[in-house]
Length: 254
Image (cartoon, rainbow, N blue to C red; front, side, top):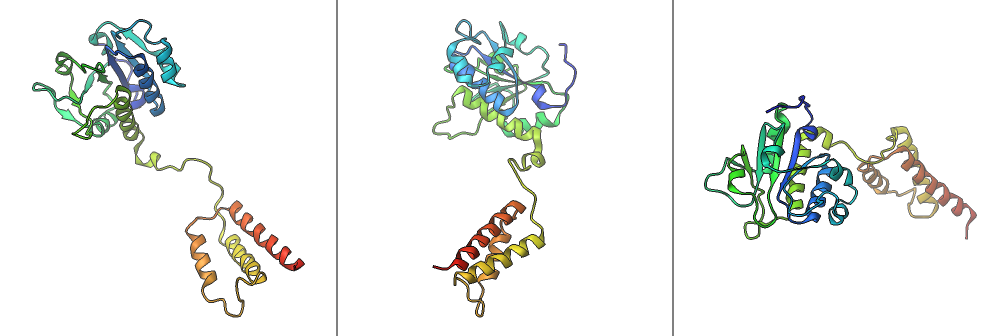
């Protein structure tokens, strides 16, 4: 078996294989599940309808992941689908008498992410019949998603999403997953925050909300409230703008 050049990124080392898929929408759904988690290698084994990768339903369900469909391959056997892979994991809700070791998505994802020499494939069966025993028995492990035992049937694309998500989490690691997402401004300095508190206190006195001679614990409580928010410079400026407007209105009087 000829192996490709080793790439340590699991996003490049993991292949998704669909065997004898019956619904084109499920192929599109798997493509979408893969793309949302950063994976792109998709192979179909004998889909049960023609033009599987260009079918209108597959394209519609891909919903923006048409590039995954465009880059996918259709082959005639599981052996062809596994070319270039040195590790295979079957995905099934049905346990077999003569199956390889059973594992959960999180456990296998951690193993694959930690082993840069593994070029792995996760294999999903037909929506109605699942994977045939002969394919499962050829695999290194059987992935069983720990679902509700009273109703453990997942849609094909849902199962692919679970596996892809766990592999993404394992590949990125806790540090990158914990990185903040979205816009974050500059943190306000202590001097800026103190100036805001003073300005806000003046405004509250001006509207008789705060008695300057008997302030009690209002300002300390407000300081504790704002200290939990991690104020940014722009937020301090907004609060000072509010205080400034309050003072201007109070100065004009009724």
